Length: 315
Length: 315
Image 1 (cartoon, each protein chain N blue to C red):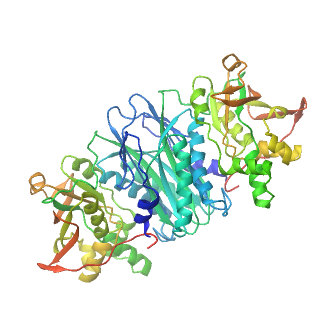
Image 2 (image 1 turned 180 degrees about the vertical axis):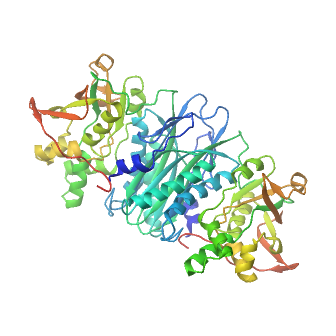
Image 3 (image 1 turned 30 degrees about the vertical axis):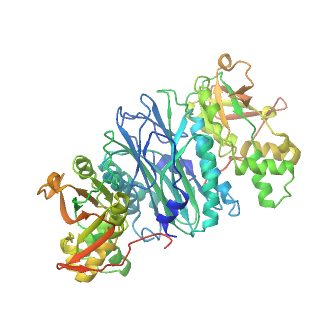
């Protein structure tokens, strides 16, 4: 099976999107953009053994490669439309590829995204880069730069699950209900696309949580030129995380575990009101934006010094 | 230097493009698409040791990663606008990165392309995926599927240079003028963007030459449901290729060397007339489209059986 047969066999499922004029199989894809909207484009790479364990099921790798990009789209408030796949493989293992493609299309189909092109190459390590392009109402894209002093800081869903799930996977922990849930949160993250769409009229700023809440919130406050006060007692921890991790470790996973793929956003209290969910997704107030720089944490009403910096390549 | 510092230091040069509303540094890029045009999007990956020798200068790797994508855009007749970079590195070597970024921006600037986003990750091998998005007049994108019996088959520039240049590089051949020229054709391919733009009113079909003329022409005739007669005496061979390779090897490089990044296209004889260049780029008639399937070759007026299939991953 050479690369052209491989693409024809695994990555050429038909799309029902009438705006895909030319899809997989030519030098490029031809797309008809929606009139009067802005485009949003994101790219995220998964490297085998770095972003996921080499023995993670192929279907999860495919699902995850799409979902982490959908999460970036969600944090921009964008509607995802089209994706391309740059896939570097060690060998062409038909079983692995079939499972990988199934996972990839499953995640894409959940959000109505069409695979429109790609490139398949050979290397010494699996590297999966997915790029997604979508649309957003002009000038409405959410960015990291809009937070203002007085904003509430909120987060969708729960944080720390995926970090704890990955640790359990690596330790070969028995997969009871709680560990199974945490692992699923790592392997098949739920991108908050509908919540992100709803946030364009609510949020002042937003960021996708991939490297860990503390590190990602730091990026948001730096981009906005503000500071943050984070109330660690308010971090939304799932029952599964509380059941499997000591409180100290649960806090560590929540702040720095990474791979949450939730949206952290800020909004004026008058705008967000007393809402406890958005587009059906629970939201939690975890702090507020203040004048200044950096993040100060509070726990049990007392200042809490926190040092960990989350995940950074090359550090 | 962590990944965020790396991006800020090497990949955040300002763009003058007013349609880039949000560029490098947020969860995604926000772009204002040109009204009434189709979008074209392409992605091509370079893997160290597979697509280029590991000791190729970093500036050439950066230049080449962009140029091979510009070549795909050219073959679609598209105007390239914006690119993203998914870069997997072994370590963060500031000297290598500075050179790589210089080459990358040099190629992008030649065609007015803005770097708008990306992802930088760590792996065991350098993998560079560039995606470029551009625009084309509605319904005008060139594809592989439009060739009709009676069309002339033409090619821009010359073929075989890059294959011969790469072989010389691997053999450590002395870099006299001819070898230097051939190597430059491999390291810094000239994407035929202006020629591609001019071809949208001329060509019936087109394909970018990356895997070798014979293999790529096979893809074109297959997509078009036609056959081709290729006159091997008409292949445009550069003086440098003729000076450094025996005729038999020069022919082999021309048909299967790959990495040419020229445009092979077809056009009705009445449309192309006696033109010898397009947008300043020489063009050569190398055969014609016929009813049927596959490619038959002629050399010295006699049928010539050719077997080589060009480059395919996993084959």
